[in-house]
Image (cartoon, rainbow, N blue to C red):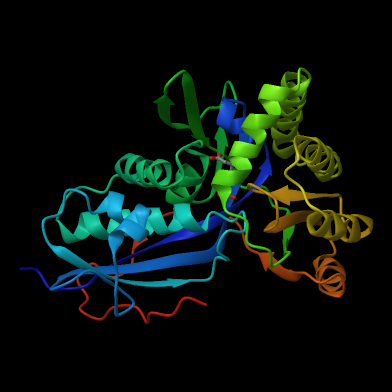
Length: 323
Ligand code: PMV
């Protein structure tokens, strides 16, 4: 039995525009960031995570990804992506684990294969959602989802009546600061909340349409490098997400604190806690104000590589600490 470690990593992400509406097939713009999830795997006598014996029933992403493997698997993980915070930690784990497991089994790991695995794991664990996070964490750099007439298509994923067309975009040369409220808010309940909102409110379709037009305008602003306009659109998107009910007072506090020093700011990801993102040319000032309002700031680098093998032939696994 193969007992060598295989290691892969995948980046976290933030959403410039379009989360939640993307679940309903609307467009979204996403950038990968320089905070990565790393996962090492090898066959072993029992299933373990970071040396602790584990019941995979309680780890649905990993259970899904190992469903066709006859052996037990040992996992080591290390992450700089805050968990349950809108930065794609579960998609990055799914992408890194999927790639490492494919390498362990000597099966192909084209980007699309890993996206299918990672999105499958997300759906298995969460029950609903779009392939946006999985696509961003696998591809890295920047992606659009369901933006028409893009010139670098990557893949199309369909589920039920929904179809998502994912494309590569040039990463804008702009500075983004993330502010973490420190409140963990898993994605599934937030997606369910929006579904209930849509069922109950006749004007919900208008909000979705407004998010769509905001996102398409944002795509245009990025291509023209129009940072002022993109910032305004981000703030409008935050307002629309607040109407959907997925902001919270801590997110609003950080968004409000960042706005005087930013072109725009909004929550990122599923909301209810987690992170916001500000577009700024004064990142130090935004960091200070996020800190003084109780958040944890991260100045993120964009334009980073997607899922990659770290040491396919190396017997030394990564050091295994989840912060
Ligand atoms: O909070 P995150 O990082 O899991 O992002 C969720 C993004 C949503 O649009 C809210 C859900 C989805 O599946 O697209």
